Length: 202
Length: 202
DNA sequence: TTATTGTCCATTGTTAACAATTTGATGGCG
DNA sequence: CGCCATCAAATTGTTAACAATGGACAATAA
Image 1: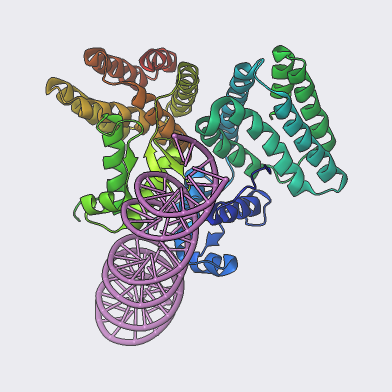
Image 2: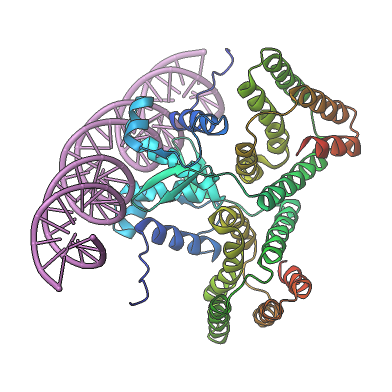
């Protein structure tokens, strides 16, 4: 039997695109979003667009005012940013502690694929793709440990953090750091992986 | 001029009611929710109901399957519950550290009101109301410190934690603990407040 | 008997029209 | 000249009809 081909719902595609636009800075903070315009852009009606806007608002990327529409949220002030980093670290450290000895060869292969994407995107100077691969790597681990439950808690935090970075500071380090995390996981050295992970989240 | 009467949007009312039903256990885990039935119950159309179901799904109270509707989420396994407690503590400790010296007389009056509600609900053995007042107390502090941003991160965690408790174990302690927190805040003794807060979150 | 396929029904996903609300502008009045 | 009330345009909130999807059940063939 062939590998199941993944069906991606319309709403999810729209959400992904908007998230991408926001964290890439294409949609700047305080930009107002019009439901009808978005509906036209994606070739759907306002219904699904409304759903997506609601979701992104819950995720903290957008802010909504009653009967006044939504706009792109502003960057976090430093103390909140610090809190977010701390919470994200706790979640991911928790994740790999739960994963000790649980990861299969298939998991490792998947993570290797993501690292390849990361490297390729870096070589091509596609920084948006670098960001996506970076997030995918971490999400894979979080999801493997805590499922949708934990991922839903973790994801908005990452997105909010990313909104604050205009661009990846040192993409090269980014690749190396993830390599270190993966190698440590493969060797089942959780302490090493934890240290590498904490160094990567900043 | 008359005091501004607070307008509570339809969606919010529906969301509050459903959250209440879920936390109180009236809607047991794995219960499937039908959009049309809910629409009839609240006397609105499916649109707003869909919006609410999406939100509660984001909050982790419900789980959704494509084209298959939503159902009430199950309780957390112990390790996740522990992580949630840890993160919630971190957020609330952050909140009161930010609030040092910032709370006004009006804030204290508001918090006193909530404590009265808590005491009354306890006296009347209205455990649902006890839970609501309890949450309101903490939410007031979190919101005062971090606004909607922090509240949106914090709230789902609290809700998920509450789903795991069938009932308040010792309502009397609950009142005393919140009294201790408020008194410490009034005296601007952040260390004391932090200790009391950490003892209350469990 | 058992596995497969086809049909039906219940439910969700989507759409477009309608109602309600906010904003900004315009004009009269102090 | 500035301020407030009133009105119009634009935008969101809501509704109900329509399309599409998934699951259950029965019929068929091996």
